[in-house]
Length: 156
Image 1 (cartoon, rainbow, N blue to C red):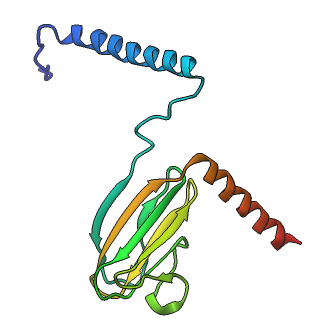
Image 2 (image 1 turned 180 degrees about the horizontal axis):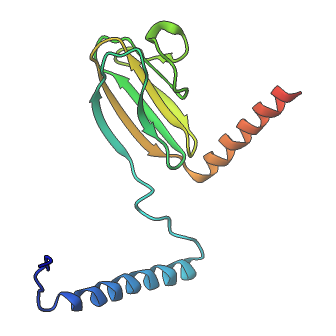
């Protein structure tokens, strides 16, 4: 005999109600955008994250952050180190010069474009504080134009 989940009275009535609420919210959002003449960015993509993690001693690099939008990442090494960070996947070993070393107690700021990844490699257990926040739209345009100019100068 196959397993049948128990049926709850009124459970099917909750789905249309939730859909009505979602539709009402999206309609109010569209109306507010039309009245103001600007689009309201979704709150889920515009947020700041702050966390602390412990590095693992390894020769291979590990992923710290994968950018789903343009972000600024601030890293602070709270213990002795050394810890190297970079956007290349193979930045190990730590003192090879392939990554940027984090100075102890100082904040290092790194700009990441959408799709970029940030890796770290450490030779001992260290505590690193990470703060990420979105880059404003106009600053994104400036950063993107600087990247294109840099590539153009390389080709010439």
